[in-house]
Image (cartoon, rainbow, N blue to C red; front, side, top):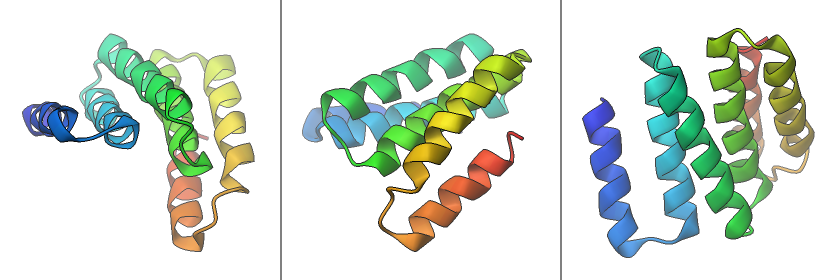
Length: 113
């Protein structure tokens, strides 16, 4: 799973832009979180946020970068940081135009509560 996420990120880096970079970094962060690899989950979450901000991406992608950082903080047992990232993501969820995307985001954030 990790190798597939890393390969996807690499291939999109050859033809994509900030959107694909942010998504790829989020995917790598998520897989690392599932595997219990805190440092890698946090590192790639920060990279996802960097690309989302630098690319001026829609709130959905910035919120998912926050979700990645919240998930890493949750893994670390840092409730204060987790709550802050979840709060930021939840605030942006209200700006997500697509109701299915908003629902998916909120469901993922609920896992961290």
